[in-house]
Length: 302
Image (cartoon, rainbow, N blue to C red; front, side, top):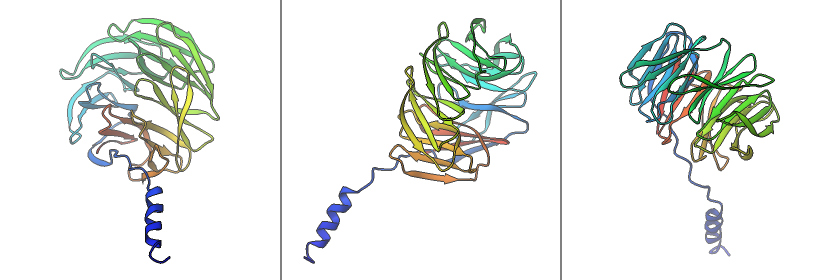
C-alpha cells in the first residue's frame, strides 16, 4: 500500500491541476503625471500606436514604450471625453460645448462642431460618434463631418455608453439597452441587479458592465444582451475592462484595489499602488493596458 501512495497522489494532482494563468499587462512601462483634471476616460488609437487622454484643455498622445508625450493638442476648454475612430484612426475629443476631430501623427484639428451642454457619456458605433446628455437625449454625429444625423430621447438619462461596429449599448440606471446605430432603434434590453456604473466594449461582439449590488464584472453578448460570463472580484466593481478574448478582466473595486481575474475564476493580481482608478482600457492585441487615476495615466505592458 505504501508503494502505491505516491502514484495515487500524482494522479490526483494531475486531475486537479489548474488551467495556466493568463498573461496580462502588469509591468509599468510608463507614467504620465497630469497637471489638470483628466478626461473621464482614456483609450488607445485604433492602430495601437498611442495612448490618449485629456489633461485639462490638452489632448495628449503618449508613446506606449515609456509614456513620453509625442503629440499635444491644445483646445479652448477642458476635454471631458475621448473616442477613437475605428478605421481612419482619428481621435474625437469632447468638451463642454464642442466636438473636435484630431489626426494622430500631424496632431492637427481636422474638424469641429458645436454641441449642447451636459454631455454624460460618449462612444463610437457604426460610422457615428454618439453622445448622451443629461436631458435624456442621445445624439449621433457623423465621424468625419461631425454633422448631427440622428437623435433619441431616453428616460432616465443615459449615464454610460459602449459601442462597436454594429451596436450601441446604453445604461440608464439599472437598465441596459442595445441600439442599432443607423436609426437608434432599440433591439434588446436587460434589467440588471443594480445601477450600471461603467461599460466597456470587448471586441466586436461583447460588452462588460460594472454593476452595483454585486461583486461581479458581467460580460454580455451583443446585440441580444445575453449574460455570457461573470468575473468575481473582491468588493463591487466601479470600473472594469475585459480582454478581447475574455481571458481576463481588470477591475477597480470599492475596496480601493485593482484586481485581475482570469476566466477560470482565479485572482491573478491585486494592488492598491495606482490609487483611485477612473478608467481602464486594454489594447486590441492585449499587450498593453491603461489605468487612469485622478492625477496620472499609467501604461502597463506584458
